Image 1: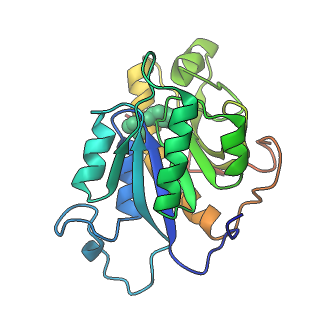
Image 2: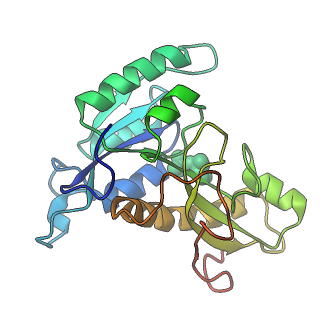
Length: 242
Ligand code: GRF
């Protein structure tokens, strides 16, 4: 079992993504790889601080070969590992075996799911308990699963948001690390609402990772409890309006 957070060194992050990778981009900006191409947005030269960074992204794994997220990783100078697992290609057992081998090879401390559209096995999430985190586009426990923005519109809520949470064996059920609210505006459709939430995801995810790595999150807790474990950041009236 690896050391719990905080670590006495810069943490090594892996990001798992299936699609365009905008959350990956925000994590790369916040936790640049050590060997980013000079002049790139993820270059550590951009940060003049002499403090060692809390984390670096060292590995990106994608289950959809050719997805934009993998190209982003390559452009940032991070190891990009496609392991095919799609509707009719690949399977979870093989994916997780190859994933674990890559995580070991790169000495990963924390896994960030960022638009990763597959459900990992209970064995895998148990092995990584407290060290695997996800971003979801709702204020959990509301609107778990797919199409969270559509669910919010159909429910007629006036506020929704995003949640960064630890991953357990359930779907979007793990302990909440950080949440940010956004308003649902008259005339919103899934796309406008998703964009507004996404802006807050890009703020929340790096901040949640920093808190985890500082050891500020009780990773041993059970299911998410919005009232106690969750922290709402941001101003629902003032942020993220289109
Ligand atoms: C985000 O909306 C995230 O909340 C959800 O999947 C989407 C991924 O977007 N889990 P991106 O690939 O990070 O741009």
